[in-house]
Image (cartoon, rainbow, N blue to C red):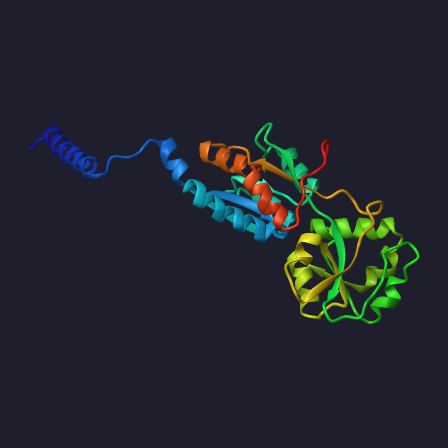
Length: 271
């Protein structure tokens, strides 16, 4: 057999294999339809854990769609998104980390909006005798004694950043800077107080409400407390119909009622 017939036979066999594969393969759905069958991945601040889990259940019950929450410190989530993590939506506990992603052009144009507000509170174990009013005259270091004040890492975790700012506004930061138990996120700070490993802690009001083993000692005065706003945005390149539906659902009356149940409020206009 000459070279040409041999090549022709090989090509014929290859064509037959490809044809058989195509005939055996199931009829594919359009790319857009396949994408919309995928769960929508929502990267959310740890402090919103309970609310977003409940919202995911409500969304599934109402629409049959699926939200996959991924919760951690906003700083951790923002870094993961910047490194290519497959997040569709990002709900941050402060503007700083949303600004970080905006600077990298990783947010869908026009999708960023202020979704939630929160407040800072000082907590202690439920059986603690600690009583105080947060003010510039407070000797907080003396009240802590040899114990620790649990906060989120003030260099990275929004709750810790807010706590440092609030304490500075009251002139109390220098008192307690050497008495901190720094945690990887606000829920970890809550756990330190919950387990009695810290004399007190600074968390969001919404976090304090989830544990019966802690109590609110005092709320930070509004004049000293930084404005706490949770922005929401679609991650650049992840916009698709199902992502848009979840994005709109997070702003709906049903989702707002769930957020409210967990202690969140809506930001004031202009936030």
